[in-house]
Every structure is written in structure tokens, then in C-alpha cells.
Image 1 (tube, rainbow, N blue to C red):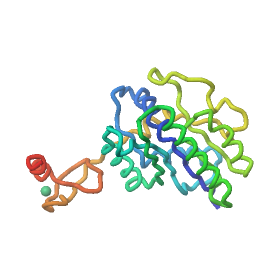
Image 2 (spheres, rainbow, N blue to C red):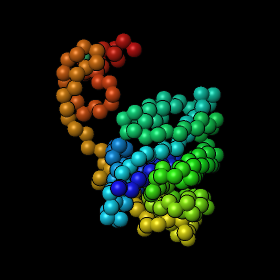
Image 3 (spheres, protein in one colour):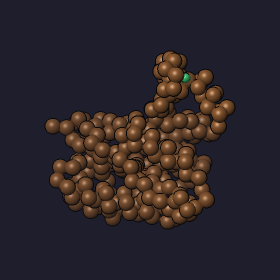
Image 4 (cartoon, helix red, strand yellow):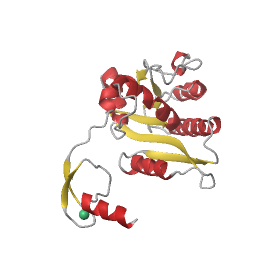
Length: 232
Ligand SMILES: [Zn+2]
């Protein structure tokens, strides 16, 4: 029987540390990340390390969004979260925050992620290995408790880069928090770069076929897109 892995993503951490992927690829201005592939990449690492089959049972993502009352536009962020849920199969837990401030957002993410990981740890046979994508030292007590339930922990961190110098003691330096050596997200930069395939797709509006790299749920051909821009 294969082992069950659950992935827990600290959305704030992943957003910040995507710069280490860009730095590794020499794309300082950024590139697209293959979010559908990301959880599987680390599952494979754990499988290789243990030399056992590891099945990914769930990817849990924790993030925040500015509330409707604040003056920040959240349209782009909402569609990103929708993409993670619908196209990448993530389980999303998103919290509305009044102001896009630093500390409070991350406290919510850490509490939500920690509660969820502990909840699944207490559920018999929910998972065997938790893959935590995030390395905040605040996670240490929670991880130690999860390990008392017999769960194994894999931490995914990042090497320091110019944009993100190390701050304080790293989670992976703490005792009794994990069962395997840490994995580094930037070591997988090449695997995580999104490679868009050129495919023929049918326009949702006029039904004409056209070649595109667009992978979103609804496709509109170049002519219909141009018309829409003129109308709006
Ligand atoms: Zn069309």
C-alpha cells in the first residue's frame, strides 16, 4: 500500500519566496510557475527518499485577500485563487483582511494552516506524510505535536537569495520538527517553470478553432477578444 501525503502551502511564504525560483532561473523580472505540478514535484521527492510509493491525497492552500471594504482591488488575486482551486485541484482556505498589512495576514495563515495540519493528524489514516511548503519558525510547536501522532513531516524551504535575505533562526534548524532533510524550492526551479503548450482550441463565442497557449477554462479567439475590447 502506498503512503499518503498531504501538502500544506503557506500562501504568503510561497508568494515571497517565488523570487528564489526566478533568481535561480536568471529571470529576475519573473516567470510563470506551474502550480498544478508544484505539489507533485515534492511528493516525488519524498517517494524517492523513502523508496516507496507516495500518493498525493490533498493540497491545502492558505492565503488572504483584501476585504471588499478596503480600497485594494482584489480581482486579480481572486482569479488566481479560483485558478488554483479549479485548474490545480487545491483546497483553498482564504481569509479576508481589512488592510493588506504585513503581520496580521501571516498570523491568520499560520493559525489556519497549523489547525488544519493538526486536525488531519488526529484523523486516523488521513495522511502519513505532511509536506509543509513554508519555513516560519512559529510552526515548530505544531509540527512537534503532529509528529507525536506518528505523522512524518517534510519541510520545503528556500535558499536565501538577494531579494530575501535570511531573517532569524530557520525552522529547519529547530530540533524535532521534521523527519527528512529539508527540500529547497529553488532546487526545483527548472521543474516548476510553466511551459505553455501551443494547442488548437475552440472559441467559446464563435466556435472557430485557433492555436493558443492559453490554458484557462474559457477560450475566446483573437477576433472575438478584439471585439470585446472595442465594446468595453
Ligand atoms: Zn471567436
